[in-house]
Image 1 (tube, rainbow, N blue to C red):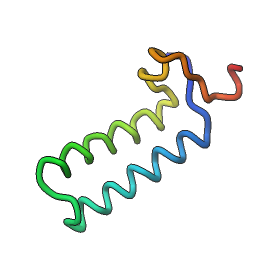
Image 2: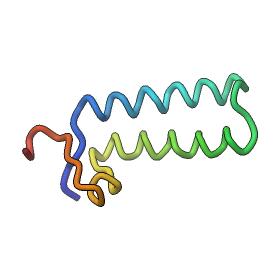
Image 3: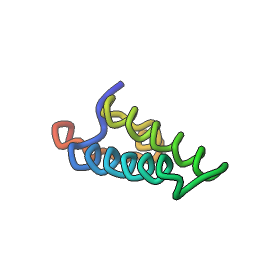
Length: 68
């Protein structure tokens, strides 16, 4: 897997995942929507740690400054 995510993109995804997790565990978002958003937050964290987003590959986006 070739890296296609830059630092700003990774930080933004982790922050969004953190906000979703806080909202879920404080019971502000609940039910099916809460579970779906929590799964999405998990995907955000995983893609941030790997610096690779499969969706970016399909669309042709590359935010990693090293590969430009």
